[in-house]
Amino acid sequence: MLDQIAAPRFRVDVPSAMTVTVTATAEATTVAIRGEIDLPVLGRLRTRLGEEIDLAPRALVLDLSEVSFCGAGGITELLVAASEAHVSGVPFAIAAAGRAVLRPVRVLGLERLLPIQASAEAASDRPAVLPRPRGSSR
Figure 1: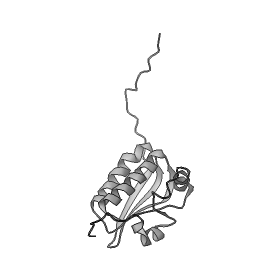
Figure 2: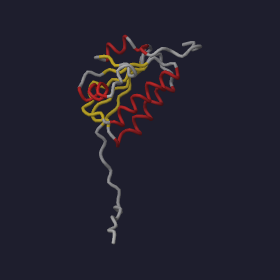
Figure 3: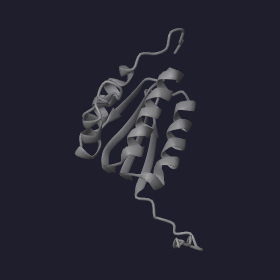
Figure 4: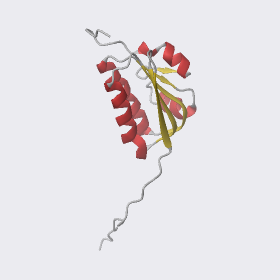
């Protein structure tokens, strides 16, 4: 006979360990993430980055310098954001110097796909790492 595992009758909300700060200037929009990028926050991260890309800023910088953990889902969201920015013609760069982001990117061999700079200032100076699609007039 098989034992059955009962589903819990209540929902447990895990407090978010990620905060998002958006700063927009005439030159670029910076989305600064602080904390952990893991499963409970992926939907919120994808929504926020998608909204910013839809606004078509002159450049988008994703500042991950204060990220303490980045799971596989977080790396996937970075790839999605880079791809969506490319398709939308929005110059995009990531600022990250910490092991939490750089290690999984290097282990997975994603350095060529993700435009990572060591600081937000360097990323702001080089947001056009990904070429604009042909015919883009921005």
